[in-house]
Image 1: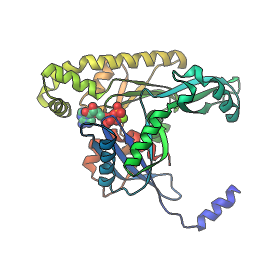
Image 2: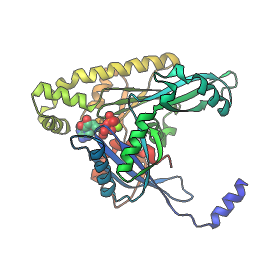
Image 3: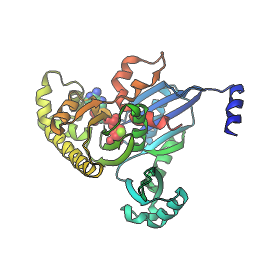
Image 4: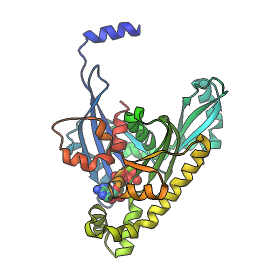
Length: 347
Ligand SMILES: Nc1ncnc2c1ncn2[C@@H]1O[C@H](COP(=O)(O)OP(=O)(O)OP(=O)(O)O)[C@@H](O)[C@H]1O
Ligand SMILES: [Mg+2]
């Protein structure tokens, strides 16, 4: 049957497929549109935009910001892939006795309560078998995700105000892995992907491209901004400007934000220690992404503290890029687009 489909497809003229990923972060909206060409695995980035929120941030201003981003990117669709993150999202990697997906769904329906800090009725949950290939083991690795229903309702309401529907509602950390797996073949061994946003840093640890661990901590760019405000007695706008363009004050700036970097590195080290005990090896490389990956020198400082190589990860580097797109803006914003690219890749 599959063969017949393939043969028929050769004769039916296929249209290129466009997918939109919309990342509604804590500081800004990021949107990308990818095009998949028929009979090709390659994806082309056809449009993107980043729009920061203006204060006060509420559902009306978020919806208005989404509309502006969609308009700037010239995207005219009504349904998008989007995601949620933060305290209301729980991701767990667990071991379960080997069973089918149906059996797993039933088992977790009864037993999910012990893995999440919320009431079972408060969440939507799902699970995925990650690795059951070890013939010698009776156990398999399972990824479990639970998202509070409130946050999903809230997201749907914001989208609706912006005239949009959700095609897929994903979780930021899965979108990051999805986007990272574009280059995954090159990254065997144990590696960490770190997305430092405005309020949240999401750490995912993968072994041979299979995600083993995820943890979100509430430290991000806003903590850096607050440290700068306190040290230099500046306004938020001035601190933000200094963060983007440190120029001659770089040394003072690093001293001011060092306690924030140290707390972040402590959290990373905790995650690394846990994984290393489970995976029997140490983290070989960190891929850094998200808005704070753009902060000058952050990779070098983190690498110095953690003793692990750090590379800045820009997901757009391995996409085909439409010739009409502004290259300079893309280089400037690439690492901010990781979640949005991962969402658009969901198809
Ligand atoms: N060029 C830059 N130089 C320094 N800092 C930057 C730069 N661009 C963005 N940032 C910082 O990155 C942070 C925003 O990153 P990002 O857009 O990934 O966050 P978000 O997705 O909105 O937030 P979250 O992931 O927490 O929901 C802000 O603190 C911002 O000041
Ligand atoms: Mg983010």
